[in-house]
Amino acid sequence: MNYGKDEEMVTGICKQATDEAFLTKDGFQGDGIADRRYHGGHDRAVCVYPFEHYSQWEKEFEKPLPPSNFGENITVTNMLEKDVHIGDIFSLDKAVIQITQGRVPCSTITKRTNNPFLIKRMVQTGFTGYLCRVLEEGMVHKDSQIKLLEPHPKQVSILYGNQIYFHRQKDMEGIKKVLAVEGLANEWKEKLESRLDKLMTTR
Image (cartoon, rainbow, N blue to C red; front, side, top):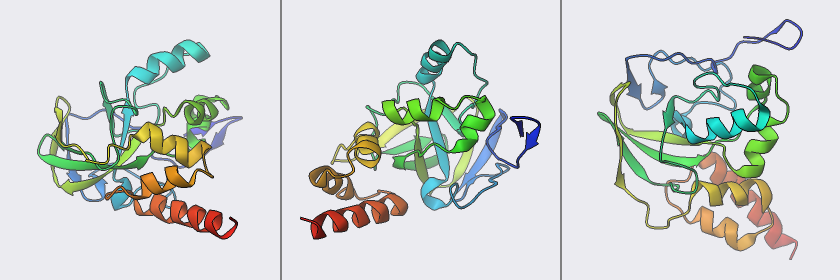
């Protein structure tokens, strides 16, 4: 991908639509991941982004966005961050996925859109999208339906998790609420446990 003043970088953010792809525990076959420090892994095998946010960003920044602008594997409707929960389990055609954490936006989005304010606004609003692990592998088609199989009983929304993770970093009760969700991604679990330990020792 080229960005800025003819600078280049290797990235997997520029996705292309496909009629079908096999979803494995590591992600979709054929989907490249350039920087595995921050992307990929079993807890982050699938990136989901709500389609409804596209119109907001296009209106706010007065610029059209290409499909899969945020590097998501799946663009969904009627699955906003406020309406889905960490630990929720969905069927996706023949595969089964589980939401694990909110997506932490990276600078590649800024470079792709040439918009230094987009990431800031994603974090401010909590409109980050979210990540999933794959519980059952299977083929997924472009017209596949995503259906809720098991809502998590704790009902901790991605939007609430984003508020705690990004904005309410000293909210001990909020951190405990997120940590209580079985299915939370290990990376978030470790970071939130570390924050909680520090808060406990400074009381």
